[in-house]
Every structure is written in structure tokens, then in C-alpha cells.
Image 1 (tube, rainbow, N blue to C red):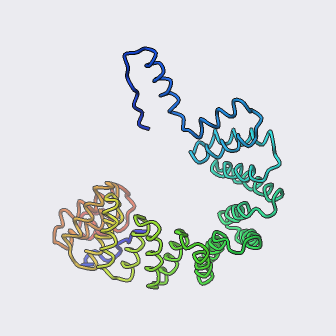
Image 2 (cartoon, rainbow, N blue to C red):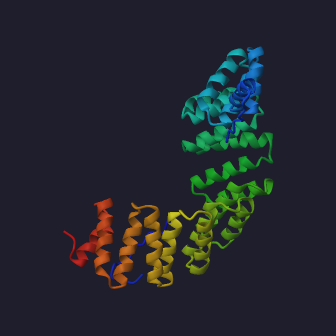
Image 3 (spheres, helix red, strand yellow):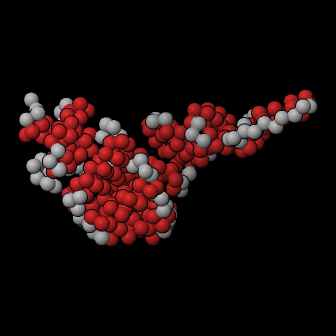
Length: 343
């Protein structure tokens, strides 16, 4: 979340394919055939070939459905898993894949039914239990989510994802202490659980607890170039008004992604509010606007900078730009009225 400036306007306070050529016609035809074949990935080509000679093999359709799902060809995946289950509908893992394909197609009721069938066939299927817990979490039925999480933990008390899901549910119902405790248990079970470290960072940062930085650093140990982690580090330091460390984090982020507009915007806020370096703030707000010409908050903030620098003409232009993007933008309306340029 970017930091929005809200203060009085008069106060000074984001497969390369290479076809071989040959003069020999037979070689050319061979090369063209090879090129056509090479367009199909080896795994898919193998499955296609096997299915040509064994068309009633449910396992092959299952493998190809999972291949398509990984390749994000969800329609092809659905066709194959249904074909698979038309041959054999007795295996729990088939229903697990079916539920995933229903889920990505936003058919959550079908996904839920497939998971329930999976558990009926395999009452120790932790993956299905946790997917059901996740479905209930999304629809804010936390009691049912906890029920399936606890069911999974009875099968495997060391399952990191189960503790992560517990933490997410506790966070949802505003029990921060239990959310933190559950996330800590998740990383005890899996020291490379990036999402759990991020949640721990967010939960402790909300308390302005310096421990948040250590959690974010653990997340960076797993994903050193994570944009969200560097941003959240910057935001933590910004919220506790450690302007230098906040700036350093945003600058590092911009080295990874120069087009991260909220990092530029927040650097502008830090220069404007923290360092009182108004010309530097102008440069950052302008950079944010260059990345996103509709970045309304950046226009408003730049207008405040121009006011501070006794440049009412450019300030008025920026406030008017705000209203051209959103005529209901209240701060810009107030600013223009105070400058005598409003209605």
C-alpha cells in the first residue's frame, strides 16, 4: 500500500526455432518434419504417442491433464481429466486434479464436491483436506476451514501448510497472537516457507515490531529479488519514520524493477515529509507519473511540492490534472478553491 499524503495544503509537509537449410530436397523435407515435431515439448510428445497405442489408459490421460494444467492450458486439462475419469473413477488423485481444474475455472462448488469425493476415497488425503480448508477460508467460513485443517493435522502433525492455513484463518478473525504463533510453527516445520515469513512480517509490522525486518530478511533469503518483500521493508521503515532505511529499501527495489511506481511515489513522500527535500520529491513524483500518467495521488503530491516551492502556476496545473482524472478528488478540489482556481 502506498502512503497517501493527507495534510493541509498550506503546511510544508509507487522456442526459438532455427530451421536447417539444405539444397537436398529429401534433407529439406526431413528438416521440416523435424521442426514440426520439435514444436511439441518432449513430455507432451511422449504422452501423445503412448495414447495413440493405448487409448483406454486412464493414467496416461491423468498425466497429460496434469501436464496441461502446469502449462495453464486448463481447457485441454479438463477434457483429459474427464476422459480419464470416464475410464476409471475410483482413484482419489484424479478427483484432486479435477478439483484444481474446476477451481481455476471458478467453479468452486464443483471443486468442493470433487475434494469431498477425494476424501471419501482416501480419508488420509491431506492435500484434499487443506484444499477444502482453503475453499472455506475464501468464503469466510472459518469454522469449517479450521475443521479440515485439524483433520489434516491428525494425519500429519508436521504439515507446514496446515499451520500456515491456521494462521491465515486467525488473521482473518483478527486473532493476531494466534496468527503469529501458527505462522511461526509453519516456518519451524519448513524453514523455506516464503509466504509464512511474509505473513509474519506483515503481522509484526502492523504492530510496529522491529522483528518484522528479520522475518522479511528470511523471506529475502529465499527470494532475494522479491519486489513485495523489498517494498514491505521500505513501508515498515517509512511507517516508523526511519526515512534513511526506508529510502534504501525503495532504491534497492527500483534497481530490480525501475517501473515500480509506488516505490517512486513513496520516495517522494519521504523527501517531502521526512527530509524536506522538495526538489528531490518533485523528481520522484514526476518519475511515478511518467510510469503511470493516471497516477492521481502523484499529481496531487507534486502539486503540494510546487506550492511549497512557491510555484502556484505548476501547482494549479497538477491539481487540475487530478480533477481531469477524477472530478471527485476532494483534496485537489480544496486546493484549487484555496488558490482561487476552483468552482
